[in-house]
Length: 105
Image (cartoon, rainbow, N blue to C red; front, side, top):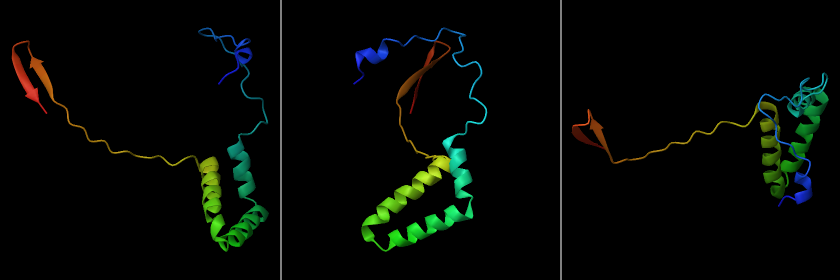
C-alpha cells in the first residue's frame, strides 16, 4: 500500500512537457552493459565456473544455480520470448448489405 505522504509531491506531466530534457548523463551505463563487460573477462568467467562446479556437488544448490544462470542470461541477453497458442471458437452473425444474415463459426 502506498503511503499518502509519498504522493503529495507528485505532479502529473503535462502534454508535451519533458522532465529530463538532457536524457541520461554521459558515462552512465545500464546494468546489462556492466554485466556483459564483467562476463567477458577471463578472470570472472573462471570464478563463475569454479562456483558452479562447487555447487553442482550439493544437490540442494542446483535450483540456485539454475536461477543464477537464468538471471545472468536475462540481464545480459534479455528475457526469452514466450509464444502462446490460443484456440478459440466464436459463434457470430454477420449481416451483409443489410439484407442477408450469414451465420459463421
